[in-house]
Length: 230
Image 1 (cartoon, rainbow, N blue to C red):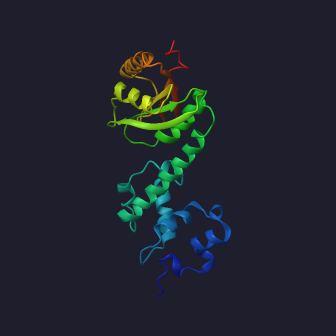
Image 2: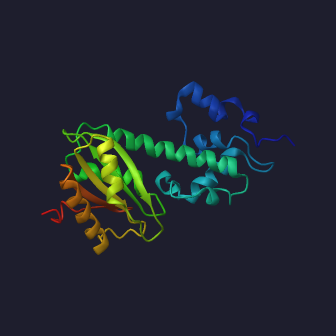
Image 3: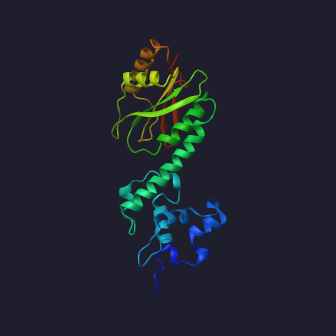
């Protein structure tokens, strides 16, 4: 019986790589693009069949698939660590490309713009992180950085680290952000205390804290919009 598990043994018209070269990446389905990354199948299943099983992890939704870990991918027969790493890297590149487009907007003037960008960067993370967007005088984003990482239930950010980085980047404004993996967007008392602490310290350096955004799967919470920056 002929081994059809590898892409090179498929009929030329059915080979995802050949199809991509001839027609462009846009012509391929999600499973075909994944099959290119997987490359080899097993004796009984083609790379395309395995790719379809990978997609089922995320209910055929790439946003949901992006929440899965390397360990999740390797549970699928035919996906070893190397293939799982390639899939994770490809999903992260897609996430960063989307986020990069949003960050290239000339101005970040509304919580909706900021929330959209931050959700792209942070919503799929399984652990809580604290991040900062650094802005110039025109509210143009000049840098984004995760400044601390915590556990599933929380993280702690050091105001000194944040303001030191703001000075290094010549930023005159900053937007604070963190994610709530639980999905609950309401700020805790600790969130409010930390925000106020950073705002007070930033005043001495003439750095404006423009907002603090909490992001989750379903949306975002803006301290400024909710009147907590009064």
